[in-house]
Length: 335
Image (tube, rainbow, N blue to C red):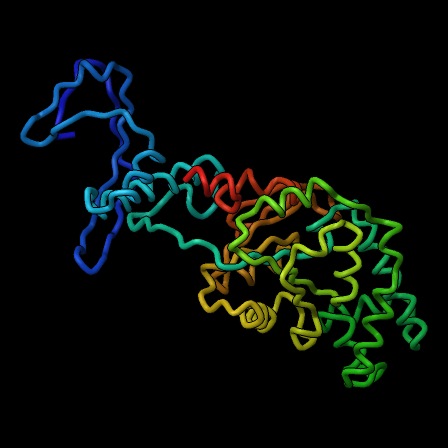
């Protein structure tokens, strides 16, 4: 701003303060946005400060800085990357980042994407989850429980499985637990789900350098049946299920630590998590993950779900580009 003046109206607004540090430079910066509505020819430059006035997009500048990095100040390039992130946060109404603090920093590129399975990769008005609940009730009654007792065990122990073991209805062995889980997930998935070409196209358009995992509270075989029915079974590196997590509930820190260990990611800030469960997203946030709530409708009340632990929320999985455009190949190419 010191380098020139203009005769037409312009508005300057302070956006954020940011730190920058490299081997050559350590400094603090202030970023201002100027909206200028006049003609470039009307700008009078201060020749001691400015050699030339150009009209360039942010993408043009960043591409030029990659081509000839020696011609650009690294803190200036970093500031422009921050500005692009800032405008994206404003556009997507990010809950955590749309109002940056006095220490605004560039977020790291995700190293892994975790997707919940049921009511996240698909939404069928809770038909499958209701079928699973009914199936759990049937299996538990068959093992000697009273009607409704399975739900009481769930409320007391976090999972029906843990409750059955605690009450002596089930042996605490891998074989017994595995047989029980296979039994309660034994529902005809292909009667409920069909190929989702839109979802497949969306997943295929994501940055191929970021691996995708299914992270589910269910079992692997159930998730595999769902992925196969949706036509996306080949698009995930692996499935992290309740068995892989040592039969811990999914909203436990231990389950999230297992997911990071399986995916070989050590920095939680580089994990992105898509889920429909507020409890799971709360743990994700506590662990330092970036979480997106998938599905805004409350299953029990029909009202809108509010999740303060999620960075953003979307109506369905197909809306990911609205809140996370940087995950997609075309957006990456444009940048």
